[in-house]
Image 1 (cartoon, helix red, strand yellow):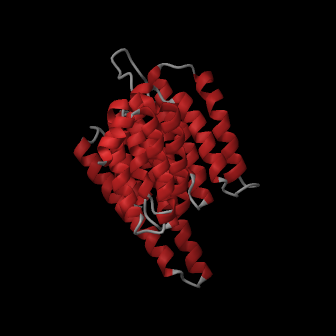
Image 2 (image 1 turned 120 degrees about the vertical axis):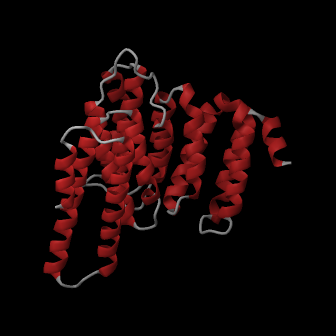
Image 3 (image 1 turned 135 degrees about the vertical axis):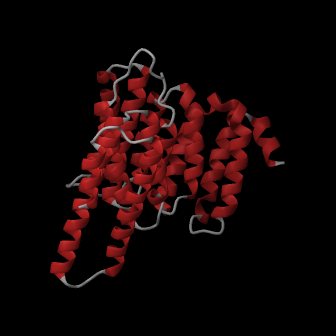
Length: 306
């Protein structure tokens, strides 16, 4: 009821300010995520009660989608979408499946509204600046143990590539043709008939599409986001992220020649943290990324490790 009232109120003029929008979204996300996680923890055995609670929570999510669409309609800018993602990101990385699923669900709805509603004019930016970082953050979720999370994450990734291409002025047909591979993987691994995660196939498809579609000016931000994602909470997600990172370093690493020392230092620090976690066995895979960076800038890698 509160979300319904909020949505109705913000439709009245004037449009709300950025500060009010951020405060409103933060409060909504905190309330809804807390309610979902509390419901998951309670595990009531009364079917009628559990069913009613699930209906109420689903209704809350639907109302939140409507609220976000209205906020985007009022200010269809990159910054608005970036605010939504920034507030969802902490919930996107939690160990609880439900939190990750809800995050990618909400973000997919926001991206869908943005793709359909954004109008670019003469003075519009030529780049979707937050896009590469968002893509990097979605890669672990594309290899998530939860099928629902993977499905939503793959849809988010496709929308992000559509938005990047829109700002770059590419034809819709060109973009959609490139996304066919991801759509096939999504059906194969995350569809109703499928459901078995094949990390190798998923990461190979991601490397192929991202290597083709992400422009030079976005590679640095994308690789930086992937490096940060190496410490994900899910083992399978870490494996997929490392494989995508390795593939992109092999094919596009030369484009970040000047930044390779910094990447290697970050990876070295993360390997130290991984040794204390259940992903310790994957430190060798991270070392392979460093080795591939060495192909592009041997001196930079050596200097960063001395």
